[in-house]
Amino acid sequence: MSERRILRGGLIGCGFFALNQLHGWAELEGVEIAAICDRDPARLEAVGAEFGIARRYTDAAAMLENETLDFVDIATTPPSHRALVELAARHKVGIICQKPIAPTMADARAMVEAADAAGVPFMIHENFRWQTPILAVKRAIESGRIGTPFWGRVSFRSGFDVYKAQPYLAQGARFIIEDLGIHILDVARFLLGDAQAITARTRRVNPAIKGEDVATMMLDHANGVTSIVDCSYATPQEHEPFPESFVEIDGDRGALRLTKDYRLTITTRDGTTVEEVAPPLLAWAERPWHNIQESVRNIQAHWVDRLASGGTPDTSGRDNLQTFGLVQAAYQSAATGQTVRLDTL
Ligand code: NAD
Ligand code: 89V
Image (cartoon, rainbow, N blue to C red; front, side, top):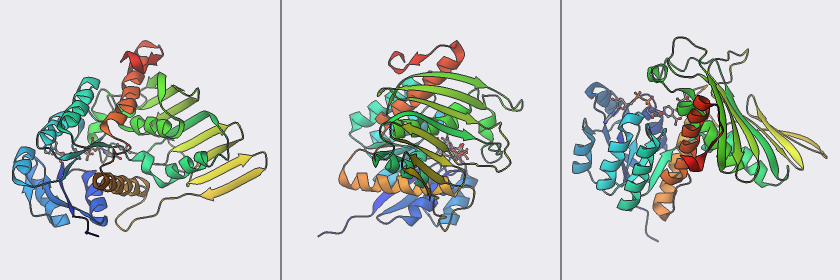
C-alpha cells in the first residue's frame, strides 16, 4: 500500500485564535502548515519564529502564487473572509474558513457558490460540535437511552472577560449571537436536527460594549422538537463555567443533562447514571480554554480525513448556511419581535 502524501496547508491570519490552530496542526499526522500569512509583519515574524515556519507572506495572493498548497486555513476576522475564500477558490485549493462565515447571508452564499464552482472542498471551522462533551451527548442520544427527543436546551452563560483577548468583540454592532451564539445554535442543530424557524430576544447589559451580550432564542426544529438556545456574557457566577456549554434534552424514555465540570447525567424510569465526559488537557492547551482547544484539533483531524477520502466535511460551507441562517434570522426576530422562518431569508 502506498503511503499517504503529507498535505500542505497555508494559514492566513496569525492572530489570537490562529495559535490554537497552529498547535492543532502540529499534533496531527499527514499534514503540515507549509506557509503562513498575515498583513501585520510583526505578528507574522513572531508566529513564524514560534512555530518554525520560514515561508511567510504579508499578502495572501502572493502566498497562493508562490506555494504549492492543498488547502488554506483562513483565521482572519469576517470582513476579509469572502475575498480570501474567492482567492483560494481561484487557485483551486481546499478551504477552511473561521466562523462566522461572513458579515452577510449574500456573502456567505457567494462563498459557497465560489467553492462549488471551483470544485474544491470548503469547511467552516465550526468547532464547538467537536468538543468531547458534546460528542458524548450526541452518542448518548444515538444510543436510544432517552428515546426520541422532544425538547432541548443548549446554554452558555458566563461573566468571563472575553473582550481582553478579543477586543473587536466589544466594538461590533452585533456581538453574542454572531460570535458565540453561532456555535451554540450549531450544537443545537447537531444534537436535535435542522431548525425551520427562530424567535429571539436580545439585551445589552454591559454599557461598555456596542452589541448585544445576552440572547434568548427558541428554535422550531423540522422534526417537531422545540429547543431553547440561551447565551450571556453578563452573568457572573460563583463557579465561572467559561467556556462550557450546558445541555438539557428530554426524550420520550428519559432525559439527559450535561452540567458543570462535564458531568453527563442520564435518567430513565430505570434510574440515573452519571459519567464524566471532560476533554483531555492537550500538552499545549491551558485551562479554561482546553475544551475549545481540543475541539480545534478534532475538527482539523476530520478535515484531513475528508480531504484524503474526498468526502464532504460535516461543517461544510453549505451546511453552515443553516447555522448562519439561524444567526441572521435571530437578529431579524429580535429587531421585529416576530418569529422568522429560515426559508424567508
Ligand atoms: P485577531 O484579530 O486576533 O487575528 C486576525 C489576524 O488576521 C490579525 O493578525 C490580522 O492582521 C490578520 N488579517 C486580517 N485580514 C487579513 C488579510 N486579508 N490577510 C492577511 N491577514 C489578515 O482575530 P482572532 O481573535 O484570532 O479571530 C479570528 C477569527 O477566528 C474570527 O473569525 C473569530 O470569530 C474566530 N474565532 C473562532 C474561535 C473558535 O472557537 N472557533 C475562537 C476565537 C475566534
Ligand atoms: O468561539 C469564539 O468565537 C470565541 C469565544 C469562545 C471566546 O467566544 O469568540
